[in-house]
Image (cartoon, rainbow, N blue to C red; front, side, top):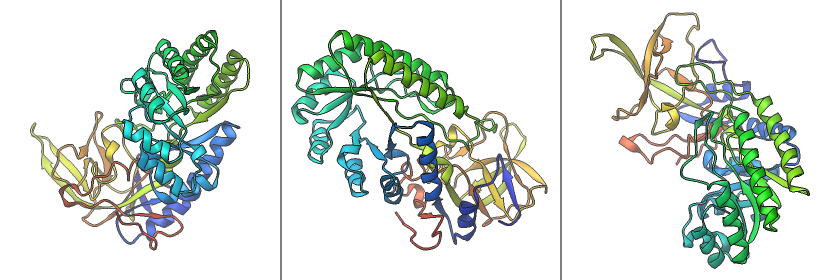
Length: 406
């Protein structure tokens, strides 16, 4: 890699950097070897735990196939995702329907495709599952508070522990198999305490289920495992205590097995943890402009060829590290608001603590690499808002050929 100015963090790995440098135009580049390596590392930390990839984080066939060949399954949230997982080589037995929000038609279609394990969190959903997926296995999602996560998930999904007991009892009475419990501690969870609290709630539910004569066979610890390359809204590196998180999870699994009093399997649903740091966008500078703000202060604005609507949807909650190939890291820099190319005021971030420092010599057309954006970059992209097309994607071992245009 030639001399490059890096803003808010270290550069990418060697193979990803080489692919970004070789890319002839804007695209998102994934390092499949890095993704597989992150999966292997996760399994070393949580031996024996079944990994089911949260497909929404990166629904690319090549990524799914690579994970399937390593024995991972899928957390699917729609019949469309189920079909894609099956095409990628994930057997139906390793695919569950993890969305608690589903219509009768969704349930019937997933069941027809071979899915036999479904998430639930309400009596109404249990009734529908009994009708359209007879005999299916169900696991009940227990709500969590989401404290400590960049994105808490505390409202739309899950039920209180007491309701989870009633839901699984109703499932048993309806001819379904009350197979498990699940939680999700929030996306990009930054604390081990979140899993500790979730385990306490799960333990209470297991005890209550035992008093009802219901013995589940697994606990799904959900997603939430963090990516490592993000920066917060103020530009400080997010440094999740990953070793502590894994230690808390392992201890929690031991506690739940003791409470259960018998064999108990575990599942995790990583998404961004597997893919975020192994995807990066090769974009370019649209313009570095200087304008006067409403208060009279002069501001620099760095407009990029990608933004909120074509690759950087999460830019309102965090900062992605930026690399400017060919610019001297020690050269003159200016503080700038970073924005995408569209005619939409939401397509920008300056965040709370000031502006991002960028090379003062940036010119239109200069390449820029946006790091740690492999999660949700493709799935949240619009179909062409304002006429800006979705980014094509490529892979680190073939950055120029085999580019998949949407």
